[in-house]
Amino acid sequence: MTEELFRDDATLLECSARVLSADDRGVRLDRTVFYPQGGGQAGDAGVLRLADGRELRVVDTRKGHAPGEILHLPADPAAAAALQPGDAVVARVDAARRTAHMRFHTATHLLCALVPHPVDGCSITERYARLDFHMNEPLDKEALTQGIARLVAQAHPVRHRWISEQELDANPQLVRSMSVQPPRGQGRIRVLEIEGVDLQPCGGTHVANTADIGAVIVTKVEKKSAMTRRVVLGFAEAAAGRS
Ligand SMILES: [Zn+2]
Image (cartoon, rainbow, N blue to C red; front, side, top):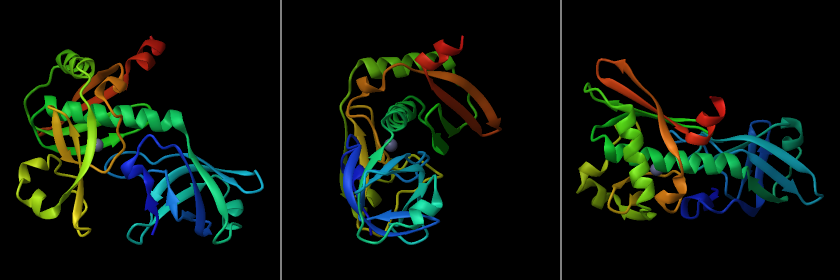
């Protein structure tokens, strides 16, 4: 099992670790700051620095088949496969990519608070985030952009805590997502709270305050099907750079 340091501190970008095993599928560590793709959020990229100073580039992070297995996907599978169990590494995530994921991910929670309908799809990447809502009413792009800007400007604290599965079962309204149910069987569920705005189970990485989301805008609202409205978010600075 890998100790998941990113669950309790999303600001941690580097940690020392030991190799548990490595092959051409990926590198498994005893602890990591790398978030594996899940809950709609893309996996982290970065580097594993070896004791001799060499750096192995990690292009993505995925969950493996075994429960709790986290695979750091190497750019050079042969070099990764040469690692031995017990080898010391320093694992460091690509800060720009992770920060983009954290800003977008927190912004999707604000969007959930603004659009009171179930979510039936979610994708969070470095360049955009999109949420699919199960609804047939039209959505106003400008009003959503303004709503997000207002919640960002209000600087709401963002924090996570762990609740018991019984507590979650007693509060079924907490689960907003139809497509991603919180993981069961560990006895506790991680919930993400944006004070006064949103509370829902979530295992992803988030900024510590809505002010840290910065300028995020709705770039597109689409009717994907009779009962699906898709909202796409982008960074205002990227949109300005394109025009
Ligand atoms: Zn989240």
